Structure formats: structure tokens, C-alpha cells
Amino acid sequence: MKLARAHSGFTLFEIIIVLVIFSVMITMVTISMGDPQAKRMKQNSERVAALIQLAKEQAIFNSQDYALSVWDTGYAFYTLADEGWVPVENDRIFRSRSLPDGIEFNLYLEGIKVNLKNEDPDSPQVFITSDGEISPFKLEITDRYDLLYEITFNETGSFEISLADA
Image 1 (spheres, helix red, strand yellow):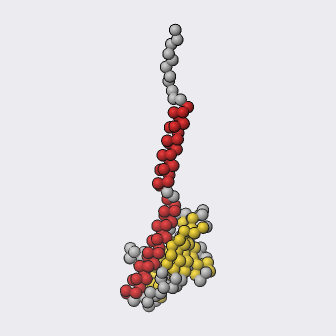
Image 2 (cartoon, rainbow, N blue to C red; image 1 turned 45 degrees about the horizontal axis):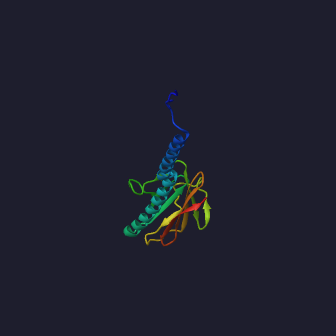
Image 3 (tube, rainbow, N blue to C red; image 1 turned 120 degrees about the vertical axis):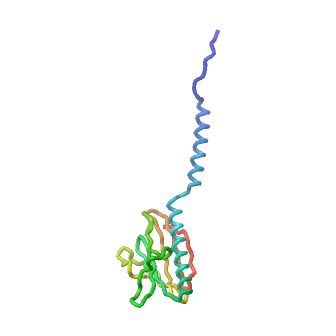
């Protein structure tokens, strides 16, 4: 008489099915989370462009010239006073801002790259006049790897944000 043997364990087929299910779940979670660095860069690109547009509107509305100073890891807005360009202070919208770690700016004026590492943060490079004109420029927001967003403004103040190849 043969005794029935009790199985204690899983078959190879059952283990493979479980691994496939886990792989699909992990893939879906990874896809839904996306790349946080890319999201931060896109948010910063959109924030800078929106602030410049708002400065243009404020310049027209208040008949006040504005300027933007950019350095490799941040930016600040300025207004024109009797003593020259002064930083906008005590304003939560136009306050000086720093970029998150790992993200940097590259600025191009008239197609020429500005060396932002040696740039004096107190000297503005982009000017926004009270009649709504903006000095044309291209601002790249890049990480240390391969992501690159470009914000391109023309003299009328219209702009384009694009994801470019680094």
C-alpha cells in the first residue's frame, strides 16, 4: 500500500506567477510616480516664466521698470529707483529664490552664454520695461545629468518652455 505524500511547498509554476505579478505591480508604481527630478525642474521652469510674466504685468500696471538677476543657483527681481537697481524686498511674490540642490541655470543673452558662476547677483541681466518689453533671452534649467528645460522670451514678452536634449 502506497502512502499519499503531503506536499509542503509551492511548485515552480506558482512561484513564477507570483514573481510576474510583483514585477507588474512594481513597474506600475514606478511609472505612476515618475521622475521627481524632472517634475521639480518643470515646476521651477513654469514658476520662473510665470514670475517674469507677472513682473511684466506689474511693470505695465505700475509704470515701474523691473529687472531680473540670474546666477547659477538662483534669481532675484529688482526695481529701478533713483539710486539705480534695488532688490525687491518684503514681497513674497518677487522675493529672491534659490533652486533646489542639483538644478542650475544657464543664461543666454543675444545667443551668448553668460558665465553665471562669476556673475554678480546684484547686477540684473534681463530688463522688463514699463511698456511691457523684455530683453530677449534664453534660460536653461538643467540638472547634473541629462535633463534640460529651456525658457525662451522674446522682446514682446511672449515665451516658450520646452524640454530639450542635453
